[in-house]
Length: 66
Image (cartoon, rainbow, N blue to C red; front, side, top):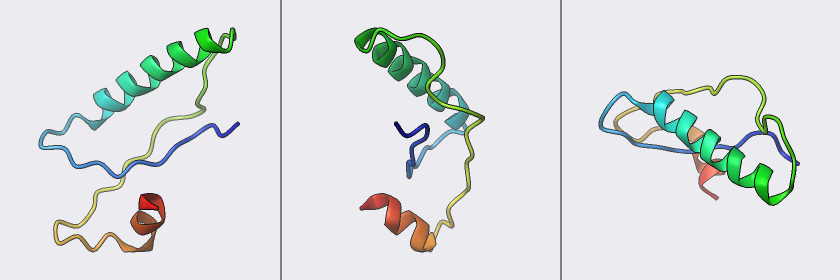
C-alpha cells in the first residue's frame, strides 16, 4: 500500500498545513475503521513546493495531473 500521495493545490490563504492535517486525519480515521486497523497511514511530514504564478510548474505537475 502506498504511504503517500501527490496533490496540485491552489489556495488563496497560507493554510496548506492545516488543510493537509485535516485531510490526513479524516482519511486515516476512515481507512483504519474500514480495514479494522490502528496506527498512522502516512510516514513523515508533508512537503510543499510553491508553483510559479505563470503556470510553469514543469513536468512533475503534469505527471501528477495524469
